[in-house]
Amino acid sequence: MGKIALRQTIPYVAGLIVSGILYHYAQQIEYTPRQGDLGPDFWPKVTIAVMALICLIEIVRRLLGMNQETHGIAETFEKEDDEEEAESPRHPRLLIGGIILVLAYASVVTTLGFLLSTFIFLIVFMYLGRYRNHLAIWLTGTGIMLGAALLFMRVAYVSLPRGAPPFDAFTDFIRFIIGA
Image 1: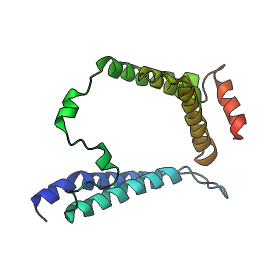
Image 2: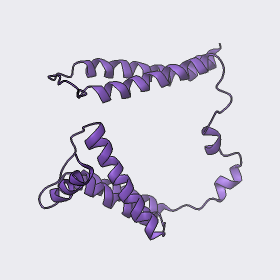
Image 3: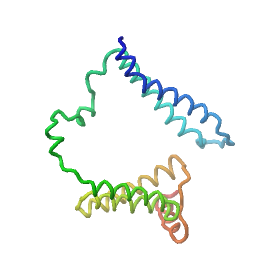
Image 4: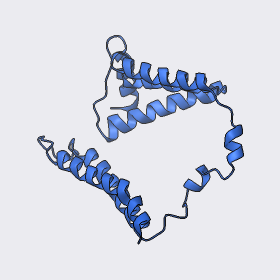
């Protein structure tokens, strides 16, 4: 265990400290428990615990010297050839368009509602990214929007922006479809 291994653990130690602080604050969420329902503190605590677990695993990996090899999906994303990276096309207009789209999404989500704005965002983002299989775009946008509705309205019970009238009718329609 050398100085390099210790230096490589610093970000994960910082992440572990941050997760401890966040967990402390999650412990202070006050609510009246209801029989059979998860409290509003459940998902934040689970997420923070997973964050802490990942940090601990990475600290142990670094200290045991297992950081030289990539494992699993990371191998797929590593590029061996620098020439391939240099030859890849650059699209600054697409990048700027994506940034503007994200900012627009953030500004209209309370007016249009989470589900409708997410649906529109996904479709516009795929068209902006030059994907042209229209059926795949619309089915993917619909599937992800319905999946998010199921997750956040039926499983996690997260309060999402419904939208201002008349856009809240879309959220009500989706809630009716999924039985929330």
